[in-house]
Figure 1 (tube, rainbow, N blue to C red):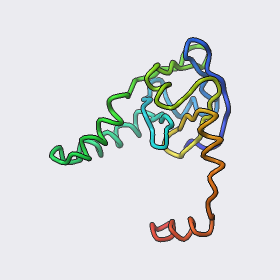
Figure 2: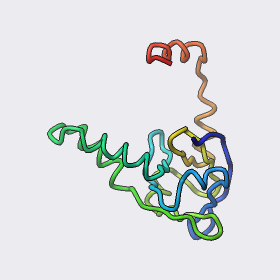
Figure 3: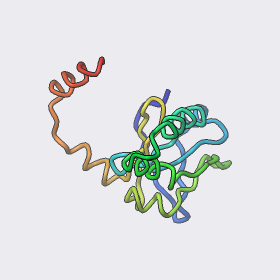
Figure 4: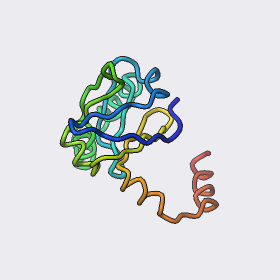
Amino acid sequence: MFIGEYKHSIDNKNRVIIPSKYREGLGEFFMLTKGIDNCLSIYPYSEWAIFEQKLKSLPMTNKNARRFTRFFLSGAVECKIDKQGRILITSSLKEYAGISKDVYFIGMGDRIEIWSSQEWDKYNEDDFDANELAEQMADLGI
């Protein structure tokens, strides 16, 4: 399970160090793709297979289902951590997430999110009512 928040910097070759706490759970190869809320998502192969199957089960005749599937699959790349613990973030994914220098790795249980520091700071400035959110989650069975 991926939990926690870690800050790292991307180098001038678009490489970033994966936090050591996450490396074992990712395995040798894993997937990096666009995420919701202008971040990137990293999935271990086992979780990616589950997610990809859900995408495949969407009706091809539904325009929004096709768009949703394209969103995730078009930018997806297979990754492998190098000997220094880094991965390469493609230019298109870097641009999508607005990444320039500093990033945050956010553990999300089954996946990891990568946020530009500016987007993460902006997201955390968003005022929300924790009690109201808890009530909404109760409606979802949490």
